Structures are given as structure tokens and as C-alpha cells.
Amino acid sequence: MPLNIKALLKNVVAHKASDLHLVSRSEPQIRIDGKLVALDMDKLNGKEIEEMCYTLISDKQKKNIEENKELDFSVMFPDIGRFRANYYYTINSELAASFRIIPIEMPSLENLNCPNILKEITKREKGLVLITGPTGSGKSTTLAAMLHEINKNEHRHVITIEDPVEFVHENKKSLFSHRNVGEDTKSFANALKFALREDPDVILVGEMRDKETISTAITAAETGHLVFGTLHTNSAVQTVNRIVDSFEGPEQIQVRSMLSTSLHSVVSQSLLPKNGGGRIAIFEILINNSAISNLIRENKLHQIYSQMQLNQSETGMSTQTQSMVKFLKMNTITKDDAIRFSTRPRELINSIGV
Image (cartoon, rainbow, N blue to C red; front, top):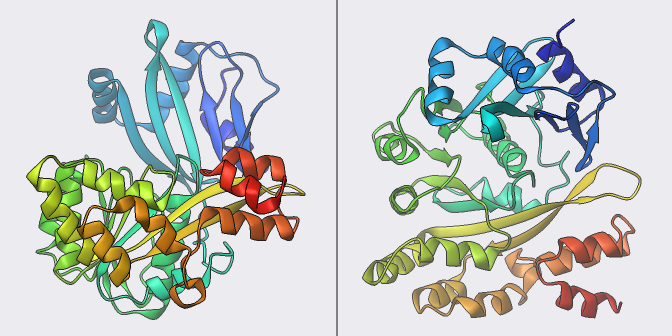
């Protein structure tokens, strides 16, 4: 009997896993607490994967993946859950697929044990807020929790631009307009440009992929909107560098000037294995102030990290090393995992005296 894709996705939920991977010449595998685990099933071939996966997509989407060799979309099963999916081809033109579960219940900042400063950020009227980290670090979940906080407390129009739309917010105090890139709009940059004409208070840009999107996001933050965006960077300072490096020559001077005034904060996060099972988010937080603004404008980005270490009780800032040390003292994470995931392992080792 052929495998049923719904049955496999039920396995994800039953095992409290985050992802399902279907790759030819391998059993279906799921990710539990960050580690891949093969299900006790037969190995799949490309034809079996294609037969299962094509049941979830339209003829238009089938044509899309056959032409572009990639397909991103989201799918909802009322009795199972919501998933973000990616179809792609591997060697010998065999279809493969990756599914990530999106919790139906909206996450909250409290349940995620997020620092209090994230709740304060949601009260801002304008500015650019960047949530960063590697793939699978929980950026989307943190963003959803921050938008949920706004939805509970603020009367705002929130436009989300994603590829694909992940968390779908039910209107409470706020009004949500969710837009799928590729279906509801042609590109992030195009949607963001026209969003400014759609009377938004808050704009979420699912991914700041190119110079045009980054530039328009900064402009939107400058013109009185609260703009959330994501980048695949590993630290707050690297995030600022990545934005500036997206531009060339004289443009860098202009973008540094714009960023120095429009940037509000960078929240860089990583997920570490937790003692006793599960995972915990480690946050590094940069909050723009006059000192950091001057460093950005004057192209002294290497000095930002030192500023993040000063007067933290007043600024709300923290470094990844300090967050890790706190959880190590609480015996929440292990030294080995902390060092392995650290962006500054030598600094961490000196701080904990290994």
C-alpha cells in the first residue's frame, strides 16, 4: 500500500517533531529537538515521493516546480496542523520535500520565555526591527509572538509579506492583511513598495533578500511605520554589516545614514538543546541609541559590540555570551552545547572559566 502524506505528517505531530524530510533512497526522517530521526519505514524512491507530494499541490504549482525546480508553499490540515513546505529536486531529477510544522495555537512571548524587552519593542510606533538567526532558529515563531502581542493590545493594521505565509493571525484588536509572495504579489520588494499605499501601521517582511527590499524596508521605517524583517545572520553586529554590504560605493554612505536613524533593534537568536529535552532560545539584543547610531553613521561597526555591553540594565541590550552564561548558571544548557553554538567561543570560554 502506498504511503499517505497525511499519515507521515501525523507522525510529525505525534512525535512532537519540527520537520519531516522525504528524500529518495532514505526512510522518511523527522527532526526532534534539533536531531534527525529515521522513521521505521521502508526507504523511498523519487516516484513514491512525487506521487505523495503531488496530491497536495495544484496543476499551476506542479508546472511551477517543473519549470523552476523549487516550490515554497504552506498547507493546512484541520485535523493535523499547518505546515510550511518546500519541494526540490535531487540527483537524477528525483523530487524531495521538506515540511515544517507551524503551531496552530499562536505563540506568546511569555510561553517562549522571551526577554521583556521584546514586549517593549512591540509598543513602538515606528522603526526597523530585525529578527535574525540561522535557519531553524525560531525566527518565525518569535515574530509571530510579537505580532500576537500587538494583536492583543493595539488597534493597528498589520501587513505581512511572506513566502509562504506561515502563522495566520485571527483579528483581535488589530487588522491583519496576509500576502503570499508568488500568489498575492510578485515579489517582496513590489509588495513592500505598494504596502506604503495600503495604510499600514506595522509591516512584516518575511525575508529581506535583496538590496531593493532592504532599501524599501528602511524607507518604510523612516516614514513612520513599525517594520519587522528577518535575515539569516548569526549576530547583531553581523546583521548591520550584512545590510550595509548589500550596497556598493557611495550607496553605503547613504544607507548607513538612513539605518542609523531608522533602525530600532536587532534580535539575534539561536536554539540550543535543553537539559532534560526540548530546546531553548538564546537571545542577543541590540537596541539602537545615540552612541550606536553614531557608530553606524561613521562606519565604525566593529565598535558596536562594545557598546552593547554597557549599561545593559538601562538599555535592555544583551550579548549572546551573557545569555549563555545566565542559562549555564541555571543548568539549563550544557557547556559543550554553549561552546558549540557560540558565535564568540573564546569569549564564552573565558567567561565560564573552562
